[in-house]
Image (cartoon, rainbow, N blue to C red; front, side, top):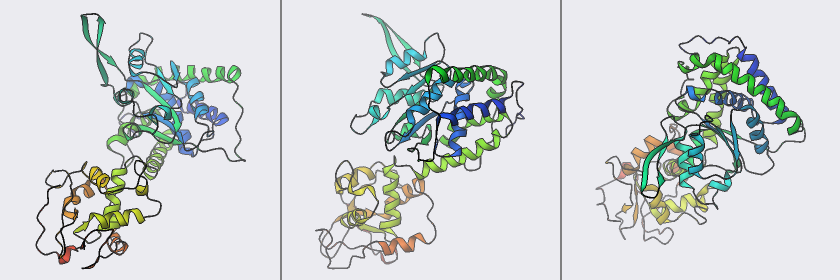
Length: 416
């Protein structure tokens, strides 16, 4: 599992994690077995956060209230060191909290959707705290002092953070998080009622055991380089490496369970990813619009995208996708010549409408879109209306959709 052979500590790490998982199961119904594994490892990692280069955020998210998110956060609070629960906090207050002499806190944000939700607006400073504090080198430079007697001081932001909220989160936060997508309990899913006066003491007893165990494996975890499952790299590797190191230190069945959970939750996060609308646009252009075509007028692109069922294009920023928003989204990506993707003129027998060229999109398709199965090109071609000479689409004067095979002299680029 790692270059250091995983062995259970004298306290019995595997048995301890089993007890922590069982405590969660008494009060929480998580959507998958992988979620129980990840949350248990995250609880333990909070006691060892100073040993790692990164600390993954954990986010309990759901589409509806009453799905157990706050209760999950409540149980995590009893198991983690120096917990600080909040539903509202300024970034400056959090920076000072992390730098306090009491030690690194475990910050628990409930109702985080009220901070990052679509009606709340983006709190860039708080987002900056969450993003920077994910890695040990993160921090903020602030002036402190009185009047003209000001000195620059770096405030650290590295600490464990758990969140709960409705909907989703900014993609910069999501990619730094283990995502647990909570659901309302089914009638046959029962949990034990949580009574703080009774059960908080039981959670604290487990927390104290986790702290003692963490002290016995601190050197092992600090020097560990856990083996990652095949295909796990980049940001997901940063997120899961601390949790896998904890699992290896615990031993028993936890190294295998941790790696299985890693793959399951990364796959689930990818399947449920709604944050990257740009990648969805690029993929739909490649798979549903262009096919074998080397250029497609903007009017045709919009007609195809807006006709797609279960696609987001009918409601982008509270209105259907149009030529202006399409151009804005695509301009975030670049052509193979490292220039922003922009609409260009497409020469037709009756006009010069604006559109997009496959050659401008190929680099973005390669970098951001999932691999295209061999049969996708054929199906994509049939999915796009074939516009013939003399036809007009969505009010555009005779746009012609050329295929790459029949392309003649390329049209000259038009200025936007």
